[in-house]
Image (cartoon, rainbow, N blue to C red; front, side, top):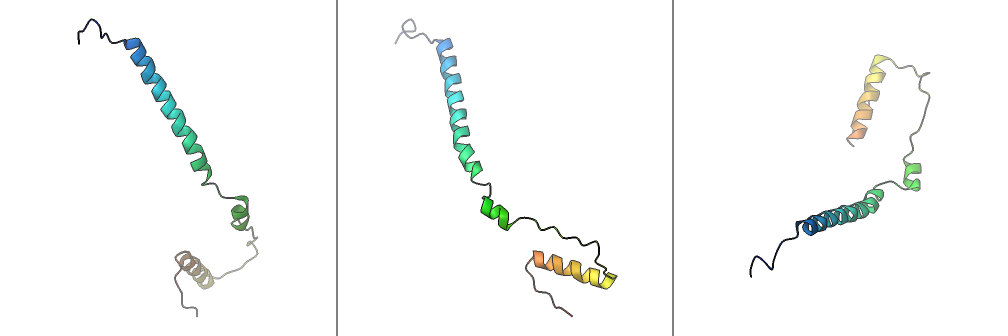
Length: 85
């Protein structure tokens, strides 16, 4: 193995490095797109979880009823049972 017959072509090495990097990035992107798209909920799931709009401006609650409503909503978030008076 003499150094005369085995010269390193730095231009070709750079080209191969860039080509391999671009191919790897393109492959990762092509793999990631369907994976990320699978996280999007279906139309059926969106319809089931659609927000409900209700006009509550006409409701009149006193402070005690308001506190009970807030307590009920908080406990419902954490699936805890609350004692109702």
